[in-house]
Length: 622
Image (cartoon, rainbow, N blue to C red; front, top):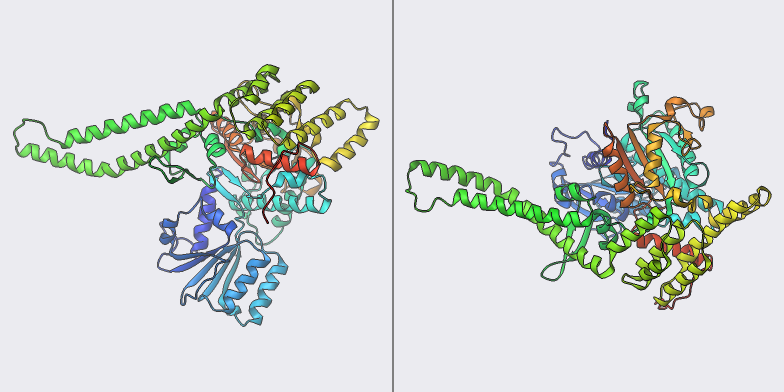
């Protein structure tokens, strides 16, 4: 069984569009029943990567609107609502029902609607005498965004800041943990699997694992069990492992420059929900979709950029050759007499040519798209020396440091302010010891470039705290730990765990090495201390290690709390494809962040702690 999350979520959405009735033989909703689709902004983002607007008509959807927009009545037509269970949305639904906007309302909530909101819905429709308009209410457990077959995001913003905010109280932390666990529950419900959960002890990873374990246990006891089909004894040995980490496990990857195509497109051009806009050849902006329907993107997304440029050239030459071949076959032979056999042959070639035209046109569109994207990328790479940043960061991590002159040369050379800040922070993380004079030189260089150093100061503070933890004797150590955890959140000691948690020479990330060890299930000092949660086992044995719970596993779901990226996703997919037989790894995160977006979260934390330089910034307009 492959964990194809994109396929499973798409099937759930199509069934929802079919008024939650079984689909017809072609796998589509009944298009003879015309309906209207109403969604909120969050659910629009869920739908966007999965179902194109042109596909909605196939499923009988003739009109679609955002719930917060003013809408006119459309009679004799059912409306399918797909929204988050919130106070605002429930009020809007009650208003729509009381105004009799639609013939009937089929309500689908992206996650389980809390009882107080359900009661508000019931009382609101009763009071307005419109309860008969509500046809059905469904909890869909779809509160996550699937971008690839094995990539998802919970789209929960600024999680890293919220979990590491020194001013955050216990209640705020518990709310975030509950929200993350609920999102993960939706993913597991959609896949209909109950995994074995593994995570490092302490910090957000254990908190989320513990809450999720309890959610699954409670649900498995209920009558309407979403996991019923996976409950047999035979399937227990085929269960996946869910590995939960938090961003501090491998901080540097969150801001590193990568020179592979997909991570570059995301980091530099701002790929969002599988779409991006870039300047066109003839001026203006061109919008492109980059997803599983694009064969070039699927095949070459994780190649280094120079290899992608070569592949575009190869595809273009192949296309030209095929076009020439079609022209040659349909153009007739110069000077040849025209007889009946030629007519038959030419007609056959002409038919073949006509049949091949759509495929050739589609290939040309794909080539033109990637030529345009690669040209824009190349301009950015040259202007910012992104190839140099990627290489030097990689070398710095493998060696555990960099020559001082080379370091300052990068900071005074090409690149944006954010490029330089990211490079400086990675230097700080991968250096085993902090040299005060070097750090001072870096800070001076950053200020000369007018870079806000809040993020740099924040990581420096965490690094020095880590050194204090390591050097303190056991008596004072506990006091430092108490103070540190109160001030900086949960995972202080993991933030700068030195070279061990950095890239090795074969480019395999620490996350990938850890997941490999957890899937193998052999004794390994790096993961032997990891906690085990089995929601199917009696409560008393949770956290302990039955041998069959430690693997080996064919499938894994890897989840990163506090922001993930395409670099980790690519590393995990390369690992899965290398295995014999091939393993299956789904990667998910609270939100997918570019290096800039992650450093901005570090900057916010630095500001909250009063660190960093006060680089003049324009006053906000009110």
